[in-house]
Image (cartoon, rainbow, N blue to C red; front, side, top):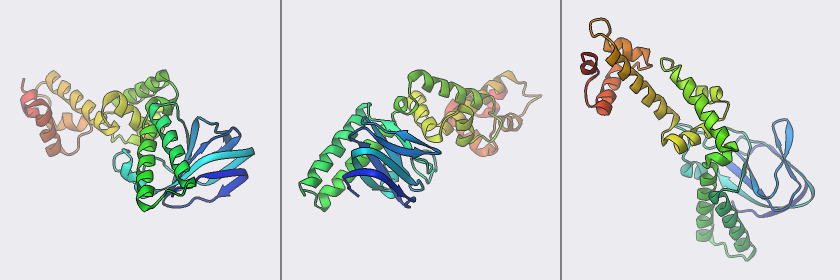
Length: 262
């Protein structure tokens, strides 16, 4: 896994299954292919490829970089990612992120220490395992820093506002996280981190919370002789009525029918 490198020229590789690749430039001049264009990755930033990402790097002059290959299983075990998402932190797309956050600076220090220890040949099996866990823990913490991921506080709030507005106007639909991410103009990974940071909820938990509150308001505003629990529940996206009733009672301390009769 641990692989400090000095590279120059151009390096191309097809994707390698079951691994992530992390590169931290130490000198200017590194460019990674991102979609149809090359993107400069300067010192102070890092480049991460996922298990299904191809790798295309070109360097102007002599470029030093800290590089590490991370088994996908180890990465996913540490990643606090999306609900039931088997692909982990990346959906096959490379990403570039800043190391300016406290977690990012710690990641750079750990990577530098690992490189120094390897050059001194002080990496037995136990040490390698400790290094692996430390790097992955720092990496996932860095990726979870929402302001770094989206650029500015204002941009993050705009993304969240678009996501919330979309959710609140589609409570009766069968919403998915990809639906919300597309409406907000961001990735699923960034959306997840922003909701955790700002709401302390996952996107799906936020959807459930909004549906439940909206259904309660509908019960309170309705006449029990003209509306039913089933109708209102379905209008708010709840198709499993038994689960809805149990969750409602746990949340509000009374059955939906009791709220409706008020």
